[in-house]
Image (cartoon, rainbow, N blue to C red; front, side, top):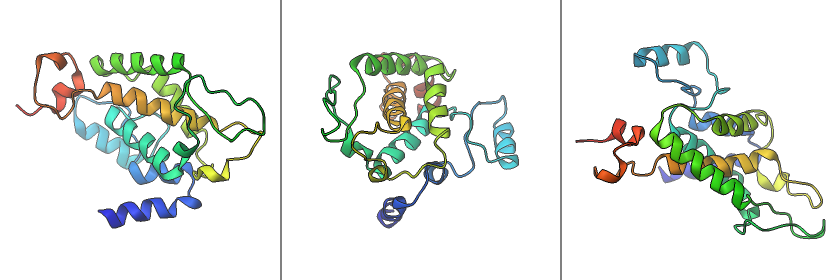
Length: 189
């Protein structure tokens, strides 16, 4: 497993965003959960399609986290939500505002209790998909005086949203997470 992970990271220098997404979801996304899982598998077999975000918050998290990790963009992320570049001579970097972060948390909480993919997830996913042919490696984009690619903020936002939607997943059953559809779906009694 470690060797496979090393290969996924070491190959990132020339990899496009689409290739990175394809490594995590090689058959495309499952944008809905039909009445019968065979409907999902049939549609995926017919078309490898990544246009719609995955149905599962866990898959959204996996894609976004892989993009952040393999690109190295976290190197340029400023955790301070009030960070502002004062001039083009300042180091290249970006952040998410406190308002954006709180919105992501709220959307994630709503997704946790409803299997309907939120509009904000769709919006950020589309931003990723519109960058399908861009190189993933952050250092290819790090140019003083230029803003970061839009998909960087979207990847961070999707991690926050999906992480919140998955709260309680993998933990023993408790009263605190009864209303979370994903926890209920995967919970082992």
